[in-house]
Amino acid sequence: MAEIRRHIHFYGRVQGVGFRYKAKYMAQSLGLTGWVRNEWDGTVSMELQGSSILIDKLLEGLNNDRYISIDWMDAKEISIVEERGFCVR
Image (cartoon, rainbow, N blue to C red; front, side, top):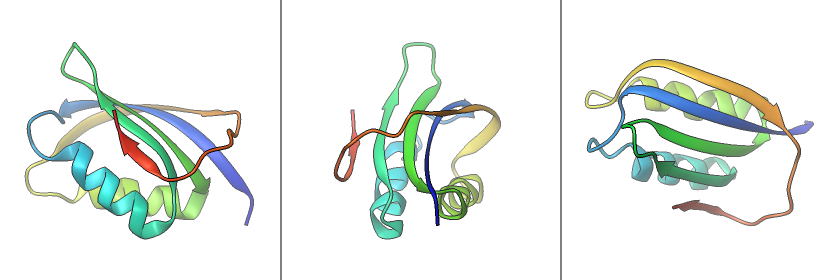
């Protein structure tokens, strides 16, 4: 499968609910790379790299969490980068 990289900005109840650590756990278990961080305005930014099917699986898992409430996401494909692992920034 072709590898892609997406930059995603999440809006809703996404801070203070374990969002970043759930994202890290899921990304690592799916073999995705990238990062996630809280923003000053209460949103969360994330970059994910891997197959689009696995990225969609991670997004589905985040959206089905009882504490996380994603109102909407802005996503765009960006250039692939050389990296290993997934980290919380």
